[in-house]
Image (cartoon, rainbow, N blue to C red):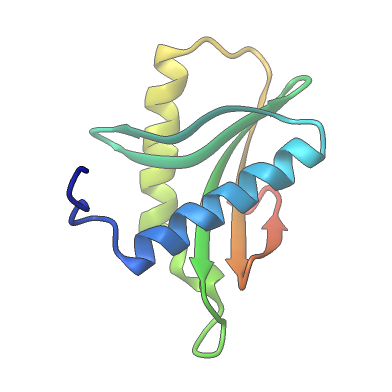
Length: 119
C-alpha cells in the first residue's frame, strides 16, 4: 500500500470535493468538463468546462461552513489575475474560437452557489 501523500490534508479533501461538486453542477446543465486542476507556471484553473460556444474557467472555493466569512471573498484581485493568466496560457495552447467566461463556485457544506461571469 502506498503511503499517504503529505498534501492529502482535510483542506485538500474538502477542496477536491468542492471541485467535484462544481464539475457536477456544470454537467447537470449540459456542459462538458474539459479539464480539472489544470496547472502551469502562471497558476491553476480548478475547472474548465464548455457548452456550445461558451468556455468557462471556474475558480472553486470550498469551505466546511461560512460561519467566519463568505468564501467568495477569498477570490480577490490577485487570485483573479492568476486565474486569468493561467487561462491565457491555456488558450494559447488550446484553440478556442468561442466566448470565454470566468465563474466562481462557492461550495459550502456540499451546496454549490455558482457566480457566473464573476470576474
